Image (cartoon, rainbow, N blue to C red; front, side):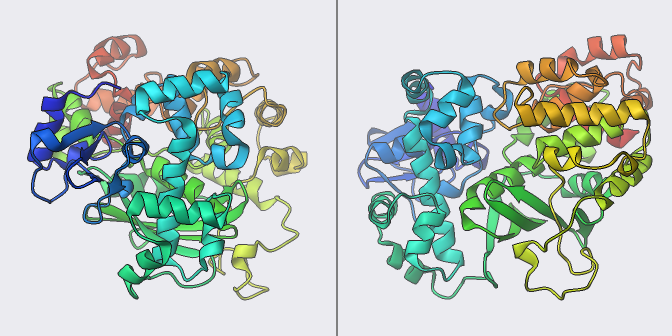
Length: 492
């Protein structure tokens, strides 16, 4: 990826937080790399290099700045817009695919050879897939060191390292400190309590309209799976190695996250999914500037800056919700989903809830479970569905397609291919497929112009309110039409 030196240097000189995560500043005279917003004295031009990723800076022999913590910066928003192979690869690496399946597994999911994938990532990111995964492991390890009392060997394997020696060497190289020194430097500031519990901050680019996010999630919350209480969103998670629960509380400049995991190897995927759910890597200034250029949307943007697209932690969950929500109200869909979930087989208590009082109803214990999986749905009897036969069979057809691999709902999916696969299934039309593209696949440029609430919102703002005319008018909102959809829903 080409980085314009003058533009990057101006961002560093002005300490502009909007560029955190877009690129990293390497200072050759000190041997460190920083966020663009680092509060340190601006380095001289001759001593500066710019890198497209933390892994590229580490590959140049630089260590992370201890002051601005560049490894904890928000992710680059370009991966939301870009649906190419590099964008898909970055989303899958963040979800921990390399730690679970290695580079061959990543390449196979993307449909390229390992060599060609390495070539593409190196050209765009300045580092290959292994180096990018290594940088993520180092960040995961640092979080565990600073927020838990786990032994270093446990942290090494939980973070995805193959050996304790590899763990020690990597952290010394990235942070210029031994792992034990990182723990000592933080003193007793660790706030996590209980086995498998981790507390951390998820950074974002301001502004963030937290109330809009919580409102959206609260009205759709399913008992036993999620809830919004006292300004905090709680939900259960289904993760690659086990289960988990998370509490997310928006605050000034970050979202406080408390994670309870049955397997600490799931930390990086859990963090990636929480960031994706709340759309924390978006660039709200750029989005709002585009939408505010339309006089019809300008007042709404001024009144509520920083609206995000609530996304998902589980693509299959969003797909099931979308099918059930076809032609019914949100309240009716929620009732049907609650009935469906009440029939799931609950023959054992999740490990994450073992410390809670037995015999109490699941939701009263405070234990939340992730949404049911495709195989679970296929095991449910007809009586669990409480819906027309056609819709029930649409759900089962989707679940079978997910189980046999003919439909992929993972974050790194090819969006166009996934939509085509969904449309080939009985009972799934354009609205459902596009809703999934927006919320499950992270496409920022989806306008649900046939949606009744979208059309009502458009009419309320004096915009065209038929699908054809609204689609035509919305061309000026590209590439951020998903954000316009959320704003029109709120207006309605």
